[in-house]
Length: 315
Image (tube, rainbow, N blue to C red; front, side, top):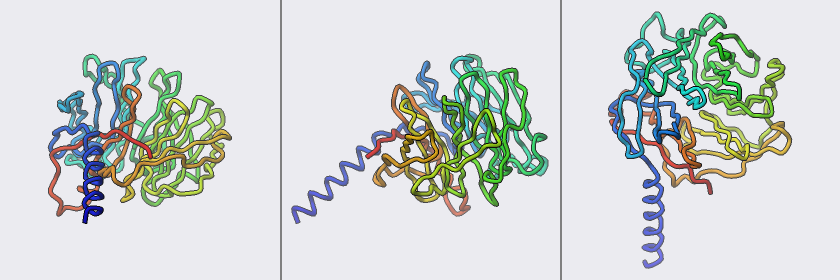
């Protein structure tokens, strides 16, 4: 009995410690999908698949509306561009918006930029005419010059927005295709290529930035179906957030410029992530968003009023 009691107490303490690494915020029925950190002001920005609202969460978990516009329908991946004091946001009408409309459903493909100081929209760029088909702008990345690269989960395309705000079709490839959710998370590698997650196939793709027609699948000894947000850390390790019931975060490393890669670490199941989607870094610590999007795929679930982002601790 003492052994079982000791094990039970140890598990309880471990679980409580994991829970204490969360910052919880009240945002009734918002259902955030993207998160981006403003390290200068010590705040996180979160998107919303239900309302399109961009919220701001301070270090104490206080949530306030930062940018509100019903015509955004749903917002997804986001990135902070500290050099230009902007928040870049993907906006589409892909699935769960309370403002869903036949004129925009699976058609909207907008990227907006919001001034971090004023909260005013300073750019609104429509990408829908760049590729014929359905659209779901899911995530974006910035290169070292400030160009923006955007994934489309419903069309086999990556778009580019240059520093003047001019959009173009950057890459299209058969490896991007999917009958359901295709490309999702994306990061810029300083060696001159993009790393992109394919959500349904569970693979990582490498796209050459000088020749975007050159797309290769990174050889890894496992797949990541439900691969969502990506992050490249200071050591050039690739962080992969996986949901679809797995609900873990993986750290991948490569010694041959991402021709191949291996899993170096992952989070334990005891971290109890709640349908994690995207991640970001604040003051040297990596955090992942507990989006709970699995709840809204089932109409019998009671909608959540609170959400959280949680420190990623690898084992």
